[in-house]
Image 1 (spheres, one colour):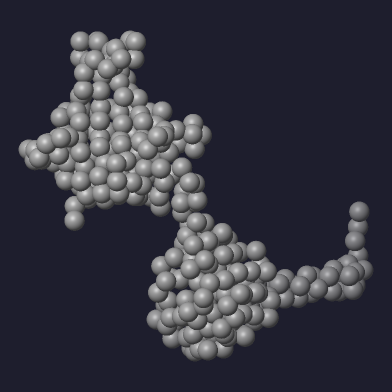
Image 2: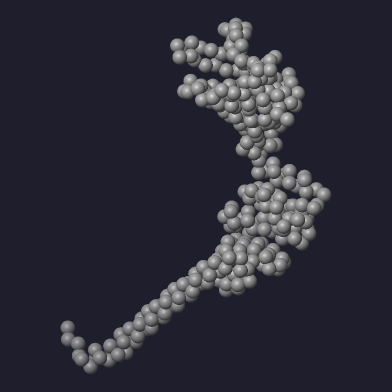
Length: 327
């Protein structure tokens, strides 16, 4: 095939060259857009870093300006909207702060950001002395996972809420959300044992040891710390199993590997906490018995343990102690 040079030059100049120019211009434009976008992103990221630094140093006014520059009109960062709200809150711009927190919550934030924005909303309403709204948002934040008790009790922003006549009820509801075991009535069956005690052999003035018994884990368990007048010590962990509907105690003492015992099937009835137990001795003999805490008065508790035979009759008393509350 023969191509005449004049025809080719005409074809190249009229068809190929304009197409190449278009491709070059398109490529150049895309390159410029990419460079521009990267430059804007880099600057935006730098603005956010500066804003966060100012936020951490509580320079609220300057942090606010940097956050506004970063956010523009359409940012989807719930965390930054939340932080902008806190800047406005600390600057006393309460209506603006509420709008920022609302914007943060609309963006479906992660639980930590959500609970923070909700709790800060409660703070603003308390500062505005709008107590029903403050109480409502405090509850929402707590349900989302914000452990608000310490802040609720101490932050100046909640002074108006704390002065409200119904604050005790509000706080109790928050407490029960934070510590759900406190709502279960049976978790309080063993509260009569909580305190500091001198432990005597029942019916005598012979001191056996001392016991410090405390509620722990938000009322989900009771921890006993026992120290004898000799060198012996031990601890027990007591809890109500809501699935079984029974109390259990796990004891471990300083007497070595064999000084462990599990008491189970615990039930408070007829003024006493009743457990049963089983154990296997080093010789393979099976031992079982009763373990009972008698609630005598608010200042006295009798702790009793026996060994029973196969018929359920007491064969011997392991120990019998009287706990007298320290004054």
